[in-house]
Length: 411
Image 1 (cartoon, helix red, strand yellow):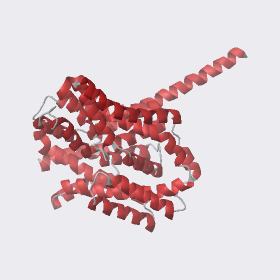
Image 2 (cartoon, helix red, strand yellow):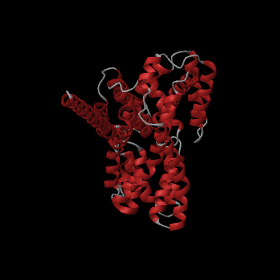
Image 3 (cartoon, helix red, strand yellow):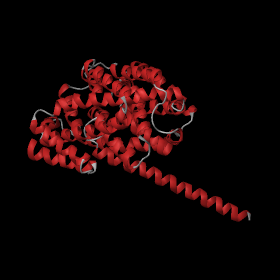
């Protein structure tokens, strides 16, 4: 009997290990596919995430996905990357978050490291296939926003919050507007709503499982602030170019709200105005960043490689993404508990509606205003949108169609 019991326990342990390995491989595979195909910037990335994680694989529902987006947009750093890490954590714990980050980030980081020696790559910024990929971003973002509006801005109050959020975001464009809009919407939801959404309590309990302890979360938050304070001192004390690069990239990743293009002025100030890089090299890297999928923060890989070779590129990626990783891992354990409280759910109802408005604002500017310049562009973008919304084709086929359209008609 004893041997039989030990045998059964061993079989159960092996089965659990196999299930865990399968889960980790799935997270890495899905995030890598997204890293290879997610063109169009952070807002478009969230559209790809919604299709893959919410609609197709159902790892979380619309309400929790929107809540995660709101949290990531409120935190400094790259919102789409933080959302990907958070989804990885929900699915596979801390290691799942790491694998999700690696899969989504590695393709574009590797491409920019390879591009780093080609300083004339910025000339590709006006090529036809780049224009086609921008058309894809229009279709993907519009499809995502319309779907989220149906679920999250579902009555007069929530749609009013969405509209006001859109208006403020477009008319008051500062680095502080987005977090302040979310705060105001959350306060409005706290005061107005009795229920945070239409999902049941059982569904919320199922979704809100973050397998990270509060102790780990607290340690991550402490490390975030310690590094923010210590790295400038190390830079000044050592005078090392390595320390200067790490400090500049860590502070850029830690203090920038909105992510994506917002980080570029910070990087320009840290590396061009300080004399670490010349302006032509910096602009070349910016051009290359527009040509690859994945998070725009991987521009750091180009900078690090130009300054210190491929090892500098790897270290640069770690430096700029580390604060985002520490913040999302640090906040998630507390977010899971808070989001179960009725008053917090009321708050999230307002926040979720604001997310819809913010996404509509981002759809208009910079996506629509920089891509749709006349009826011809509108028809091409509408065709790509029809592939998603009417013919239900997978996003990768839309990306491929956008490239072909760009080469044939926009070159």
